[in-house]
Structures are given as structure tokens and as C-alpha cells.
Amino acid sequence: MALVISHLLNRTADVYREVLTADGRGGRAASEERVHEGISVRVPQATVEERVLAQQAGARWDVKIYCLAGTDIRRGDVFRLLDTGEKFEAVDVIAASSAGVYTRADCTRTQHAGVSP
View 1 (spheres, rainbow, N blue to C red):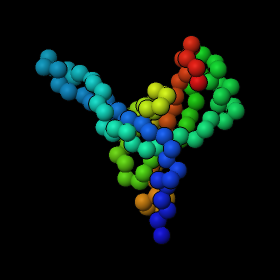
View 2: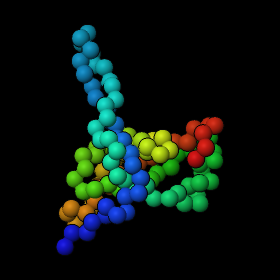
View 3: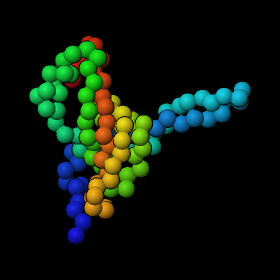
């Protein structure tokens, strides 16, 4: 029996991916393309340690974002939460050890000066 995590996905995000195209001069131009719109995700609540780090300008911390199994997420994709505008960059993508359960993106986020956590 496959586990279903859809009831745990409590946030909504758009996912963006960098796309390279020929610029007509022998080089490439990078642009950002939305590959998923309004997908359901789970972003665990920050720990006390992460909240303290977030108070520091330029602080970087890791977070695991969960989405439905089979969602096309790749390293380098950027999650933008629709409710807060927070951005998380995927540094690794992992499928659950049991097929069809979830896709997990290990992400990083940098807190810049003057931005509340």
C-alpha cells in the first residue's frame, strides 16, 4: 500500500528553472521559466536555531521541501512560496525509498539584510 502525503502539503508554490537559449552571437542567454504553477508543497516549520540564524544578515539555512511523487523537480530549481514570496533553491532532489510516496527537494535559503524571516 502506497502512502499518500497530499494531506500534509499545506503551502502553495511556483517552481522556476533556468533555461539557456542561443543568443545569436555564439553565446547563450539565461532566462527563468516557470515550470510548475501553484503546486502543493510542505515546508516544515523552522527550528529555534534556524529562526535565530534568520535574524542574522546573510544567514543561510537548509530546508526540506516535500511535494507529490513524480513532480518534475531538478537541482537548481527555485521554489517561490505564493503566500510569503520566500525563495528556496533546490540543491538535491530525492525520491522516497518507497515508490509513489513523495519527492523531496533539499533546499537552501539566504536571509538578506533588512528582510524579515
